[in-house]
Image (tube, rainbow, N blue to C red):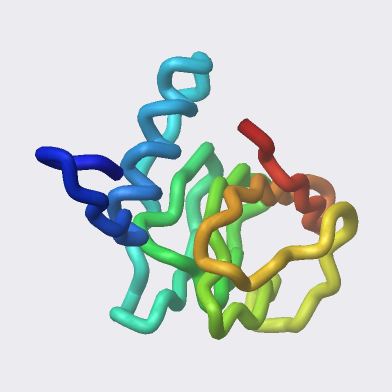
Length: 117
């Protein structure tokens, strides 16, 4: 980001805010998904469309269906369904702290898609 003729690093929160604005402009309505701790661990019990509020380490989903937009943190471990490990289908997730992904839970399976802008 350029600020008063200087280059200022973009933080993870700035990046996620920018992704949220882009999704909104694209017509995607998202709610904030708040981490249960500062390490990027999440729990999701309600169906809906969400944007994780910080880089993700892990997400445990107990909802029957959900869509989650997220950026994988450097210590990304993945998803669990009601505490049980699961292997998502679709794109591989790079734990780079900057790439946006969409995870869709449907019929007990998670499909991940890399979002490109």
